[in-house]
Image: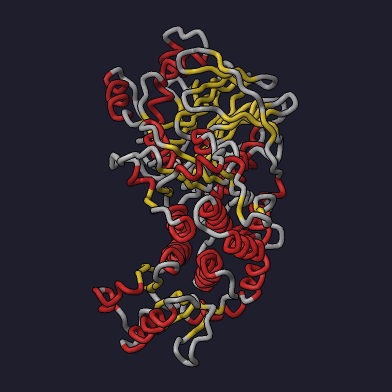
Length: 608
Ligand code: HGA
């Protein structure tokens, strides 16, 4: 979603702001802009352009040591020059950048219009600039007080940074439901919506909490609540640097992240497998054997790929721990007034840890007394902090919009959770040891899968003319099919639909024809014969079949075969997803798509 960058220090702000925006480009955006203050005036440059083009529009001969910048992903008003951020008040004294949605902006705009304010944009954000400007004109003692007074009138989600041209030694920032992180430099201070924009300059950061404001100057920051109570924040050090966000020799981040999976899986397993007792230790979950035994049900929830990964996790919990488990989209869970049981373990899943729907579901479950843990990739993120306990995925920064390594690490972490739950119940030590060995060998099996990249690319090329595809799987193969279809539609724009194999004949079989290839997930397990039957049904109706399998299928059964190495059968869903990432990647590549920045999508979805 949108990106925010701010700087106050002694260096020229503009290059730092542009570099910061560039680091946030991966989040997806439709327009960009920045404002600096010089000689008591604001200089605003903004347009519906990419960051590189904004660079060309900015006047370099206006050096200013303070500024704010933004990449916008429109929610209120089209992506136009006028709607791009920053927005300014009528006196052109105040500039604001904002991520999120001001829900009562309609009423605020009406009220301001009645007072004679003329709006330059259709955005909800512009109302904030006028309200802050008016509060200052009405005698607010400081910019912070003016911002606080304005935010008390606002409903909705925001991360904002405010610049006052008449007081350019400071910026005021605030967060409610949209991330804001301060970066502490040496005689300079940074602010951003994502640490990716900061790590080039500093590793010392402070995460604001919801309902918190901060005034930052070159040498200091002071935080407080909306009620003007001071808060105490201790800076933390992020374990990331600029190299984590560099492409290196890869053509794009998705390709890089697909290839990082052996290493990222190794990292998430590190120190968590217990070979002796055939179990896993997930320290951050803070549940001893007794507490794990007391759990009667497990509910996974997340959005998009995280939800599909949750389904994979739920299957593992049922299989190993024999506990009822399921997965649900967080966007549904938050609104459907769920029955919350005290002996259910709720598992919130998010790569960014900032997904708005997932965060809201966590808050709703906690409000009802639910026991929630987080499975999150980003340390310091809102969901990680809100949950208080959980497991970090340790996938490293994921930049590509389409998730790959974070998805895989979700699967691996759920397998460890399911193993721990199983081992305090009836899963035997020998089965536990078998699973531990299976998890341990995943990185080398992923290397093997990736070794077949050229063959998978050839299959993708062969089918790159298809306008639509089915992804078919049953039981263990079902979340694989869903995530495979998700990857393909996200980055190639080919219509892809996942179906349970047994459901085909109840309707969708009508769509099978030579122009509709089906990717069929065929693990060599107890359902092999059933899945071969599914392939026969598709072939009998003239549908091309791409089989993804670790079985020795009869020659000529499928039109194309993507062979996957054998692992423990329960871990097949983790391993089988990887060739589908490679397949989607190469199909999108053959179609010439902008793989890291698919149309209409954004990386961390911090709005509803
Ligand atoms: N509502 C604002 C900001 C949108 C946003 O945060 N997107 O992620 C606008 O539409 O300009």
